[in-house]
Length: 306
Image 1: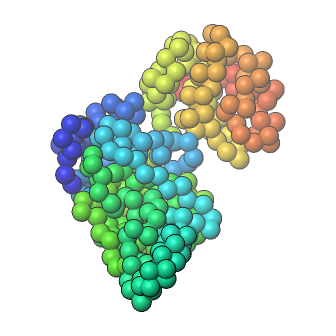
Image 2: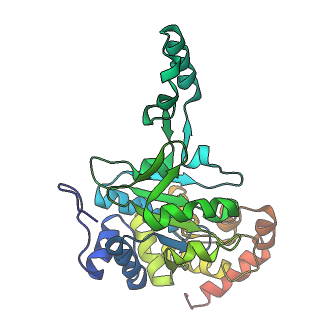
Image 3: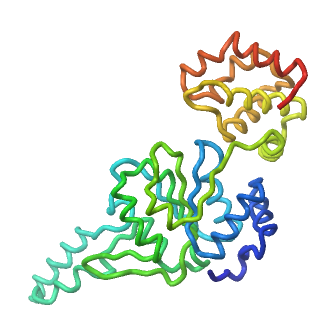
């Protein structure tokens, strides 16, 4: 995969891959840095699975920023089709072309021109295969598990050969393959055929030390004591039987909110008032608010941070 003059160059070893992510304010372990390095140099799609909020999508954003590439994002959802994901024909423009040909008496010649590139509307997957002035883009296929299984089958050609076959036009192949990052929250299993075409990594919740570094970076106004308390509280929350455990994004939001509120230390009142920044379902909030929050805080204040 070619490097781009004047932009961030591809890392030449795993340490440089880790530094590349760090330049984008992404703190990654060596295991994640290794698979990122391999995906870049082997021109293979990278499939990232993990709980929502652990930072999977951010990896694509960071790669685009630090490498100076365009980011093309395809947000998956149930019912996603080719017209939204790959391409569609510009029917109004085709109708205008037909009327012009009729007026000029050249209707017999219009057929071959109707299905040409000038009448094709590029959606994210096709745009990722087209030339970009700053080098191959980063293609983010976000939350693939939300799309229907037949859509995965359509992706196989793109992920194998970095090309799309358009029946009316032919095959469009990338001159240089894009950097492809696919994320899944594992709400359903992704098919084996797609997995085989990708390098795979499970993104875990960070440990206490790593999350502390992340919060210090993303919420620099948080004092050490408050940061230790809130991360310990979040880690204990993740051990509870919740419908949706808080991710790193929620930890960062909570830390910034507590700084905004001039909080210097956690107490039950502060936790109860701000639980909505950590937990996004009322049943989870009701379970933790009050006595359970007090119990968790007592464990923290008794002496052992996570």
